[in-house]
Image (tube, rainbow, N blue to C red; front, side):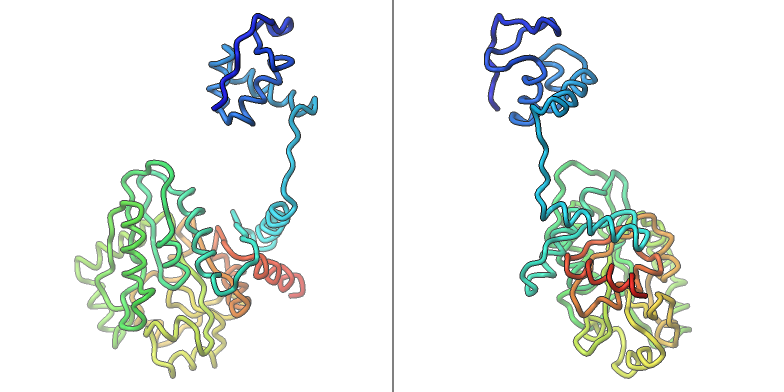
Length: 332
């Protein structure tokens, strides 16, 4: 940090000594804030004035043209698109990353999602975690830049015997480890053989306690899945191909945490849905902060269905997907 030199030159109006290299205390305060990156409180102490005075100094510096703020056009465009997403879909927040290498899209979305989730965290949070490649990318890359205490991470859907690389238990365990939180894995399969067996299992005291914790989550991290031939839901092993095909035939467009929805976000029920262990769509909506990370051309219809039905409060996506979503909503 650069240190201002002392001087016997006095700012007549402010009644303080000002270093030789500055015209007055306004310029001095602006330099300390923008160039030396001192906080307003630190500057107030250095100049022996109140913090409110420093706020006024910085405002005057902008008005006099001492400081000029320029926003990078590319960053400004992403902000404009993010605000358009918020307005179009009624979101509390949106984060749009630049277009880039499509092969690395999952990792780039994961990095952005990690920053959004980390910024939101507060002491005592209970964070529900779903599963999927993008959710795992968030878990892999999250890092807290400030102390946050008494965190709990809870798995919100049962475990599967399918693809282990992005399973619910793995996503939950990695995220909790990265943020030094208590980890609660859901001790049940994702899908049971009968509805009756599901009812019996969820009546067990240990599952009752775990589901109570799921329902107490104040934040949740999840992705959106399409239901095409190469979709994550088909690789995850939560349903037989014939069952998934049946949902598609009955209007399913997307899947959220193992639950199928139609083009407008309505639940597409069925025998498979009745055997799933985990958070329901209605319970999802009860969580105050619902962070969804998703992008890519194959997921446009699935994302629109998810956003239109108010399952999301905070959405992270890429520029191409964001623009496609806004355009699609405008022609609906």
